[in-house]
Length: 552
Image (cartoon, rainbow, N blue to C red; front, side, top):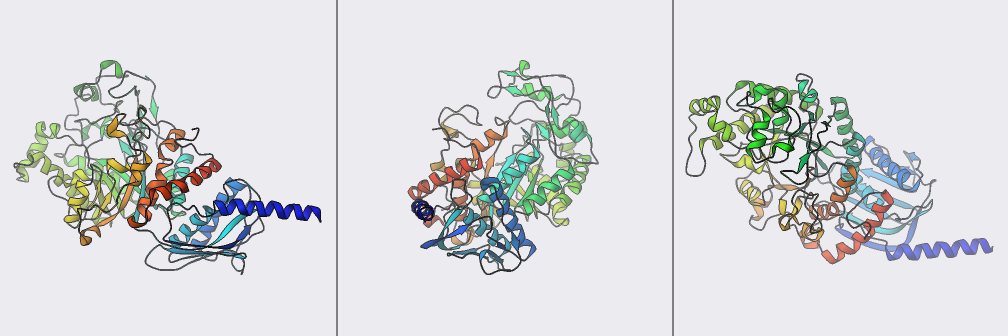
């Protein structure tokens, strides 16, 4: 009897603690009604799920419970108590979550909606490990504000293990985001297997060394660095993401940032005979910062922007890129394919006989705004768009693809502030907002951090600034705002060479990004968010995740 009474006191104490922190969900749901009582979850609690998609949600929850609390739940097709998952065929990915003493009922308007309900349920779990988990009784109605909610990872500068790519996707899922933008090719490394062009990974996936210190560097590691993902590994990642209702958007950079491909196949350059070292030195890099042969094409060892881009005057360039896409597209069900299009200097095109011949044949003229070569880039992008459209895909590019005229069906990812996105939306093109001023989470979180992309005040991006991001620019009319499909945070990895640093850079800022993209602007409140964030940080500790401010 005494033992029973003591247990009751302990349970009441646990309940009191849970009440104090019971609803701290990020992103903030549309509507929450807190009720009396708790749902008690133990290893005997059943998950009721019938369809294939509902079972995906159940499996994700079980994996989470196993990793964080050490047990899983039985999954059944029928039952009247336990965690009940139902999904419909609605048009919007909303859900309801109703919890009482006997059931935690998740009803998604769609299968992804039900999955998002699981994420809210997870955030109602205690942040301490236990075999008995008390979940507060609540009623939640919720839906996302925008359709595209993304997070990008650059694996071109530094490559990460397959296991961490999966963990990164789990982080996306846990924040109710639904797009993983995979930046697969760069000047510093080609990261995806293309069977028709084996040198892309044999040569293009490895650089002879990497600059040390901040750009342009103080030296070189003089160590070969690289790696790539096989097509089978890519399929594994795409399936892993799909099981979490996440779309993987591949990025194959063109016409700029192609040094790694050019190292493998020099014919792609306007000037195949000019060594990569020539372009390396041209932008002010020091000879001491280069490792290996200086007389051949090689994978770039430094960060920055370089003149050696894909030649727009050769048919062989387009044949190569189409062949690459022919292998890439079947691997990715995504309707959107990112072709980059940014930071492509036109110096080589201006001096290239083949490019000048192309300009003449196409009767491309310069004007007061741009030289003819800028309009040659428009030809390049539009030609690739036609190829993608014929394959049932939509081209997405950084906002430089606006230069010289936008391809007819292209989507624009606006990174140089919001101006490109505003222009594209006014021209009735779909837009994904990802401005450096709010969404570049490779920027420093505290002043004087030097192992970040920009280490001065221009690159200071604390979480408060991220949270202040308005996904719909004021410059757009109500009709024009309909073209803003969503937003994305980007993590470039020039100065990030391990997974712990990736976590440090994305957390906790990704929590702010998730609320910017999910919660209506008028419902956002920094003071309220910051209180919920403190509970979220306890959850990061439960995950064993590194984050900014962890030891403060």
